[in-house]
Amino acid sequence: MITMTTIKTTDIEVAIAALQTKTLIHFDGGDAGWGDQELYRIIQCLNEGCGIKLKTINLSSNNFSQGAMKLLLRIIGPTAIPAMRQATEQHIKKVNPQ
Image (tube, rainbow, N blue to C red):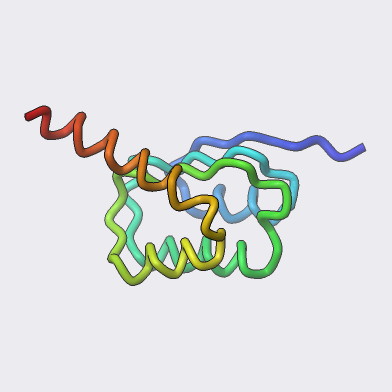
């Protein structure tokens, strides 16, 4: 029996290992302090099919370039865009409540 899992981590090695199990359903790497190098490793795993069971991914409040984020959105598909936008908007409101 395969158990699907949830993870919240700031350790990229732990994140990649969890993705490689192909059982991860909720992945939270928010506020991890990651940059493009870490995001490209996540993208590579997703592109290799490691996110087959993944339903949610939170990567808010990291240091990703626009290009890296666009690549991620191409990999995870257009249905993820509203969720990513909502998470970003919530973070902006929290940081700058004007």
